[in-house]
Length: 277
Image (cartoon, rainbow, N blue to C red; front, side, top):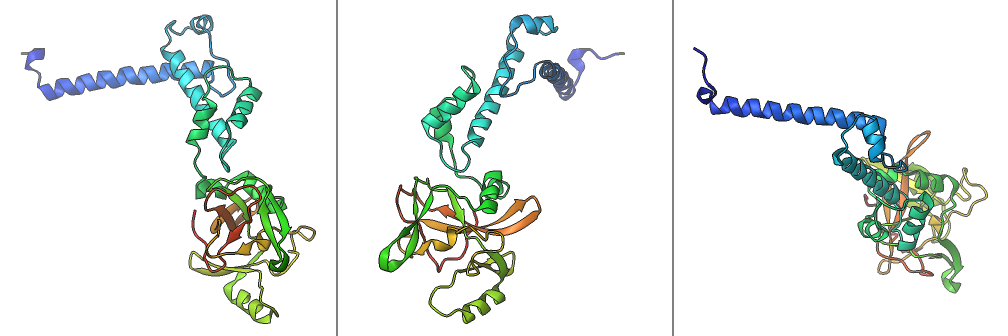
């Protein structure tokens, strides 16, 4: 004799209901996938009107439409944030970006993008095309040499840098620590433009003493000109494995330890070792 539904164990009824629920959800996802194929939700897409949605065979309600708008909003937020990844954006900069894209609705407010900004992570830095380009061409922005009299030359900020910003690199050929120590012994005088660091068990050194460097014979690389201060240092050296087109390379970058003001001298502690972002 067949069992009635009331005789069916509760666990089995629960499983059947869950399967029906998953089936409906799967069908919904498939239908929305078809909706996205018909109306791609990109940052620059125009929202599909009710007429277009129904003409394409989709329901006239706003269930898919609202989900589509949420996806586009997220893409626009991601785009705006990507344009301000290295330094915190200003309200006016984000407003100009939105205006340039022609977005009049369904986009984040400038103040929200400003509030959500966070310093870049190590993974982001190591593949950041802007940072890679600046390392390659040594044309870092916001930096200038200044004569400090008896102290000699140093580097000052020609614009403000927020805490966490990547300011420049300590540029030079990466050699072994042993080679660097030999250079120190051969140098006559007090100043040696060498940066020793440890990375993945390797004893390494950035040789900025050999100047100009082979890759930039006409450029005055700024990182080597930054002066020392153990108490007033506003930069910290960080080691990254940068993903250049030709492969990975060890690079020492200078990151702002705090907000740096316009015209402030850039300083780092020569006795500090490189940190990790």
